[in-house]
Every structure is written in structure tokens, then in C-alpha cells.
Image (cartoon, rainbow, N blue to C red; front, side, top):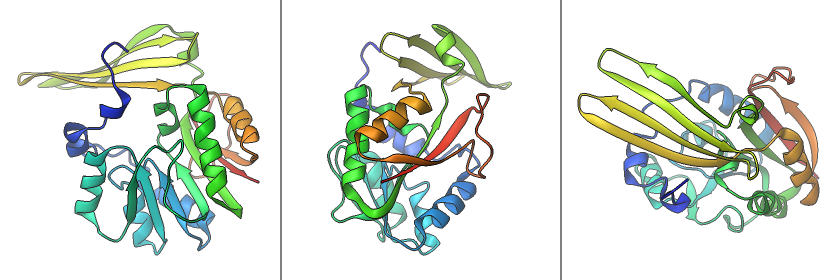
Length: 239
């Protein structure tokens, strides 16, 4: 995407409104992770504002995290001082120690824009897992996107504003350039993001390169059956 810098994509403006429109499945996410953690120490890659980590900690889970955005981490610190965080790159960095669960949710693996970088995320996670630890990723499946080079979808249509999701996909790099465009009487607000889309099978190969193997794959946090029609997957890898 022309003019897009991943390191600046989650700055103060995004952090300030990041939790305004929750997806609605946060409780399901937390329930799943509590069960998988099974009382062990937990680390969230790309912890952000703590959308998941804060309610997870409220359930008694010892959780810490890493994020590259200082603005997102500032929002988390405003919510709680009980969660230890470090600023860094999830391809190489992380909190000290080893974990029974490391998780990465909400398509965030795609924020790493190269295959090499995504493999590095798996290797970094694997190096920080306890011998019986697991790595969990939740991500959208790219079935429909792979068949389109560009498209626009109406995310919201109201009497006072509209939000358009404008996309261009490059199959040679698997990069999706996306901009959420809000148009209202107050003006136009842009929300650019770029992602490298991956199939579940490609993620399995990345896991294998990191010394991990798939143990579970579901179509959602309620352990729905994963099929070729599933719009997302929740995958669990271990040694």
C-alpha cells in the first residue's frame, strides 16, 4: 500500500478508538483461552489495548504481553497496572520466561507482511513455550479474497454516515491493501491497513518449520466444526 508504514499503523488516533466497536465474541475468546491455559502462565503477542488480556487476567490468569505500538500499550496501562507488557517486535522479542499458552488473535498474524516474518513469529513463540505449551492463532480464512483482485464493501450505511471497506489484493505477494473509509457530514476519515493473507495449510507449514504440530483446528471460539466454508479458524499447535 502506497504510503503505509506498519510501524505507525496503530498510533494514538487508532488506539483512542480501538475498543469503540467490539466484535462481540470477546467472552467466547476468553472462555476458550482460560480452558487452554489450564492454570499456566500466558503471553499475548500483539496485546494492544488489552481487549482480551484484561478480561483474561480478571479470570485469574497470569497474563503478560508484547506489542510494537506504544500508543496501544499506553491505553492498556490506563486500564490496568497488573499486566506486565514489553514494547517490541513479536517476530523476535517477548517477555522473559516460558509460557503454557501464547496466543495471537483477530487476524494479527497478517500484520506481519512477509512469509519470512510470519515464520519468525512461529519460531519466536515456539522458543518461549513450556514443553507442554501451546500456540493459538485466530485468523480469517482467505477463501473469498483469493478470488478477487479488488473490491469494495459497505460495512455500515446510516442516515448520517457510511463506512466503505476498500480493498486491493495482490496474489503474487498475498498482500491485501485495505482502507476503511468513513464518510459523514464531519468529513472523511481513513483507516488504512495492510495484511499478508495465509491459508491454514500455510500456517501449518510455518508451525512445522518452528518444530510445532497442529493439535486442534476449529471454525470459531465455540469449537465449531472447521470446513472449507468457515470464514475463520482457531488453530492450536504444540510440540
